[in-house]
Structure formats: structure tokens, C-alpha cells
Image 1 (cartoon, rainbow, N blue to C red):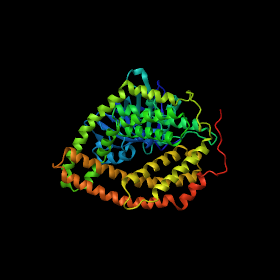
Image 2: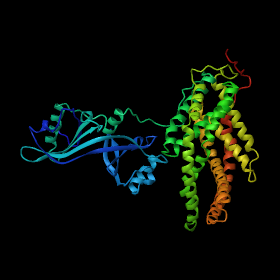
Image 3: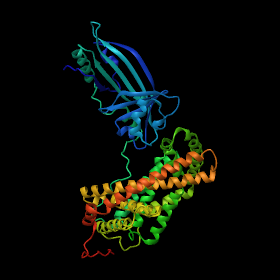
Amino acid sequence: MQRKESVRLLLPDDVGLECLRKDWVCEIHRQKSGTLTFWDTYEWGLWFGGCALYSYGEVYHLCAREEGWLGGVLCEEKAGGRRRFWKDFETEPMRSRLEGMLGLRGLAPVVGGAFRLSHGDLRNKMGKIVCRLDWTSVSTGKREEEELLQSCLVMPLLGYEAEASHVVDKLIECGAKTPGDDPLVVLLQHANLEPQEYTLRPAFGLKTETSAREAVGCIVRTILEIAFRNVPGILNDIDTEFLHDYRICLRKIRSVLSLVKDVFPAEGTRLMRKALGDLARQTNRLRELDVYLLARDEYLGLLPPAFHPALDVMFKDFSAEREMEVQHVISKMRAASFQRLLGEIGEYFSADTRHEPSSAAALPVDQLIFSRIYKSYRKICRLAAGIGAETPDEVLHQVRVACKKLRYLMEFFSELIPGEEASEMQKVLRRLQGRLGEFNDSSVQQKSLLNYWEQKRSGSEVAPGLGGLVSILYHRQQQTREQIVQALEMFCGGSTAATFKRVFKQPAHVPVRQPRG
């Protein structure tokens, strides 16, 4: 059979170039060996983006994963030190390709291995080159006998495809097989690592007949696990998303416990919500500093270059404070009291823990949740009724919090809501939340910047830059206020109101089931 394309084969450990020397002359032109380190993010952004990034010596190589194998190099960059974020890379091809796959996530070494590559030609008895060969072996790099993979890439030369096909047949005769897992996969398997999709919106497997306590317990345990998994990333300060997601998880759990009341005993619920709040408050200032530092480029882009030196002073202050705050948070999280508190929270919501009966524990979850969702929606509509140009910021903040709680309810119990209707309702809610979030961010940032101005730099060189920035943020906030009014009208009326009523409002004549036991 004639093969025109290159063919890669996996080889048994005992098969080498010797098996080809009887019929062809093997000429090795170049040999290279060394340790490769593969990099990726906590969310496996490169892996799921169809790429692999590895460093060899002082050079980073980004390549595509083509049909289960490491493909050609897309771009590379020589670096004198470690690259952590996509912005740390200097060449535009590398930065542009990495930005979408990494986002705010930081790179960390995933796995490494020793590679040996031999590149050469295969000549027939007439002295003509039949094909090129790339012979690759991969090992853990610890001991020679720990070789994990050996492969050969046969690349036919034009006009010699038929003879090159015989080379492939000979290798197959000696036990070679079509490749399955590529070197990266083999190294990951050897290290017992498996890339997994990461999400803050997991499925819970809820059904309409699931009891409220079982449903809420399942949700809390799942979200707690995600929160706990983010702790090592915070301790190692890999990137800001670990803290961000950890705090979101704590907030989600506190919200579901406050919104779906009487599922667990009241006193235990109160203590758990307090404990979760205490954990979140330990990281408040660090998250604030992260937000400011992440907004650095945006802030600088809002002002003329002449004001940039003033803001640079502020960001240097924030950066220095962040270094101290990171150590403060790490010391808190490494303390025995922190570990003990995590254990107590985990034990309280464990599936094996038995609690006293409570009024809503045994109710079917759909009956309970649908009424809570509709009640939450109606609360937003009542708050929105009097909102206008002069409405205080505090009222809009209340609307934002109410919207966030409604979104959590709909997110947690989305498996119980009809698909198309749930999607449309959440789409409108997300649009409203986006506007409210922008308004709140502008408000908080103004207050924080003014506080910084008064406490640390009043009358100094930062005053003009901060004054200009606060003015821009205020103008942006007022524009957003107008958009919020429009978004609220759409959310609280028309087809959206009709859909919420149809899906979630329970008929008055349906009796509420009493808890069992």
C-alpha cells in the first residue's frame, strides 16, 4: 500500500533502528536530548484549547495537539526566566495566542519528562533517500528503564512513497502500532493526573421529588468542595482567580442557606452562615487590592499620559500593601483554627451527619424552590418600582444583591426549570446584573480612591490624576444608571414577568406537604 502522508507509529521497547538496517541505510544527522516541562493553568486552559506549552532550556514552545499528538510549533519565545501570565510573554504571536486560553489564570508546571530525538534519513540500496525519520523516546528522566513511550515518524520523499510505505510495513511487522496517546498524555497518566473541566456551575443531579434537605445538602457539599480545592492556589499565590472563586463559593453557600430557610435546624444554619462569613471577611482587603491592580491598565487608559506617573505611585502603594496582605491571609489559612473551622463546616453538611427535623426538610424541592424564586423575583420588582435618576446608590445596591440571590437560586436549581424558559429568563437577569455590577464597581471604586487620596496622598502629586479618574468613574456611573432603569423595565414587565409567573407561581389551592417524620 502506497502512503503519501507522514505516518507516526508507536514502537515496542525492544524495537530500534536496527530492524531497518537490513534493507536500508540509516543516517542519523542530528540528535537532541533534554528535559521538557509542560505548563498549564488550574483550569487546563491550554489543554482544552487544543494546545500544549512546554519549556526546553530557556525557550517556551507553544504547539497544537493534532489528532492526539503534539503538532508543529505555533510560536516560541526565548525567556530568561519563568513566564507566569500571558502578559509576561514579550512576542506578539505568543501573547495573542495565549491570551484567550489563559485569561487571568497563571501558568504552573504540570509535568515534565526526558525526551530524546534522533533525526535522519533512510536510503535504499541505490543510495536514494526514501524517507526522513524522527525517532523519539520519552521517559520520566529518573531511570533509563522508566521509558514510557517510543515513536517513529516516517516522512516519505516525493516519488518514493511506495518504498517508504515498505518502511512502515516493516515497522508494523516488528510490532509497531498506530499511536494512541501522545507524550504529554503518557506523562500525565504516569503522574496520575487527568485534565478536567473546571466550573463554578456544576450539575447536582436534582429531581423534582428530591427532598429539600437532600437537595440543599448536595449543593452545599459540592460548592464546598470547589472552595476547598481553591485554597492551595491561594496559599501559593498562583493567580487572583483562586481567591475570587473561593469567595464566590462561600457567598453562594451563605446565599442558599439564607434563601432556602428551614431546611436545616435554624441554630446550626445560623452558626454555619456566620462561620462562612468569617472566612470570607479574612480575605476582603486582599480581594479589593486584587481588583484595583487588575484594573491598572483600564485606569491608565482613561487618563492622558501626563497623569500616568501619579497613578503609578498609587499602584506601587497597592502592590506593596498586597504583598503584606497575601502573607496575612496565608498565615490565617495555615492556622490550626482555619483548618478546624473547615472541618466543622464539612462535617455539618456531610451526608452522614444526622440533624434534627425542620419544617421544610422533607418538602419536595421543586415545590419549595419555585415559590422562593417567585418571591425573590417579586421583591426585585417592588424595589425597582421607584427607581429613577435621583435614587440613592444604596437602593440600587439592594437591587443588585437581590438579583444576585435570585441568580444563585436559578443557577442551583436550573435542572428543575424548563430548559428554554430558564435560558431566556437567566439571559435577561444576567443583562440586568451586568449593569448593576458596573454601577456598583464605579461607586465602590470612587469611594476607595477618595479614601486613599485623603488618608495617604492628600495634597500630593497624585491629586490631579486621582481627581480626573474619580470624575470619569462618576460620569460612567451616571450613564450606567440610565441603562439600569431600562434593564429593570424589561426584567420586571412584559414577557419576562409573564414567564416568571407562569413557571414559578404556585396555585393557591395546592396544599403544602407536611414534613415526614
